[in-house]
Length: 175
Image 1 (cartoon, rainbow, N blue to C red):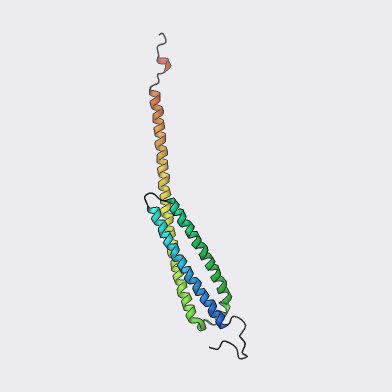
Image 2: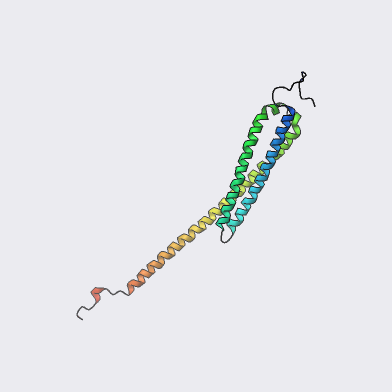
């Protein structure tokens, strides 16, 4: 396929070989993003399992949060790289979509997959937020019950100690 003009020189802009390389780069970036999202979904499921346990291991939960932070940083870097490459080739690509239709179809498929994974991740995160909120509410309730029990015990102790006291005005002072 001839990509140059009749004078033998490439037209201004991105040449065909470079365009294909940029498109392959976008595809690779989206595939990596897909892998990151799948890993995030797996970590989110692990977090849900940890929170559902009778005795929550908050250290394990924190470790999963740290691991997810690393994956999120990787996703941000992939998004930035994708955006930079796409902005660079967008003007050339818009005029020649049919020339690169296989790449465009692959990109569209990956974007749909990544979008679906992103939606799944957001849903899972919302579910985890509900579980964690529920756990904290239970803990708060237990703490409140313990405080009430402690106050009742202290009040009982104080009242019982006062029973043994005899008011001085009732005592016979003649003895």
